[in-house]
Image (cartoon, rainbow, N blue to C red; front, side, top):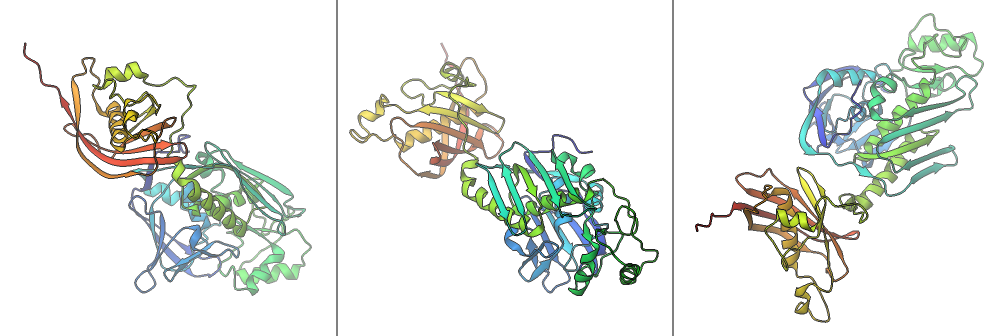
Length: 473
């Protein structure tokens, strides 16, 4: 079973290539796929190697063109269907970047679940990449409903990825079923083995509409909740080229044993995971889905993606709670930095990791530079904003030394932008992030100044940490 600490700060791909083949449930065609490792920020990309020039289509909700019984994507002349079970397996194992070479237009159905894909992923191995993985959080509830289909879905802000599903087909066999996933670490064991299902009375309709050509009573649960004649069963058995087809006492075709009592509800949950993986951004939320289906899942995914894109720029904003004690107060800062009044430009440090630091600067009318910049229209000079960022970076990069034996000097400032005025009364949150590891005292950092819900300034800086020369007496 996977570790409960599944939410990594880094992206992942496969450690090696993996091959899998099978029949497409709707096309009936034999398909071969090769899953290959891909570079960071690639995402999940399908490559139709059977078409001229091998066009690609990214697994993204923007590329969904059909949701008739499965999720189908298309772009650049490449079309791939029934991707949801594979997408769920990749999402459930936190795989972010994969190139999938496929020689047909449909992912094989296999046993109708995600389990075969999970087994292939595990055999290939999952490898961490040196690229950050940013999880997006919801700013408020996101809901979707379809009164005609009696569908209700909602995504609630939450610190992990959790799903609850309910299905109710008004069926005496299925009844009302619930399923839940508390954490993605449960996916492989609790959700991946659950197979797709359909009703017996749907089979002839599906066959008449050129669907389920690769269907098999052994790769889908067939629910018989209405009276059927022996002739009906024999006709379906002939289509599937199977003998000894019968209806069990439990109302399932061919006496198929369920892997879980609520396997259909768990499979609907599986589909939700696969379809929401098309949002294109890793996100955390508590999903509650009542009577979900591919069409509703995709519309819901579009709403979530739209929300994330709208608030994406705020995701990296530091959170400041003045009631919490700082990591460094002004006295601790003085022990770390060589700066003093009137040139010590940060008041406290609230976050500090190996890769970034966040400091606070309270801008007041008493700043000495406001006497001349500009009287009657006080504006904090941009160069001092950059200096405040540099001092913030010093907290992260200057070695701890009780003698304050180090100085820092600018070497370069790039891509510096001032996006709004900083005036008395503003509280600046200054974030400095390492762009590369510190080598030989050279620090490359990206700095951003936040005021409220806006970015006031940003810049890329290079500085050098230099040990002070010894003074001879």
